[in-house]
Image (cartoon, rainbow, N blue to C red; front, side, top):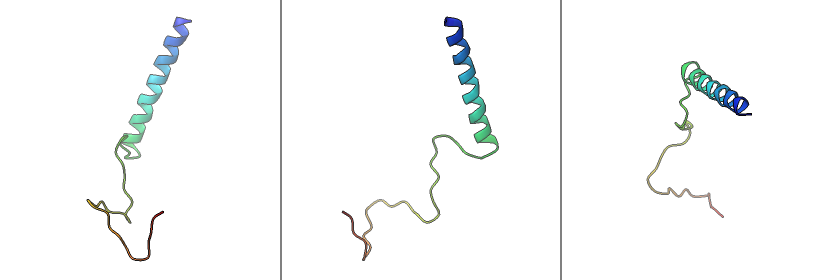
Length: 55
């Protein structure tokens, strides 16, 4: 039973390592870094536009 858990842990660790390596190398995706849309920009305060309302 302990051997099976160890093999599972090593397999999952290796899988996650390879997945992160693939994402960083080939897809240029860095885990934990948010990519923003080109239509949105960061603001410090709320910007109210005429015609838009919140509930």
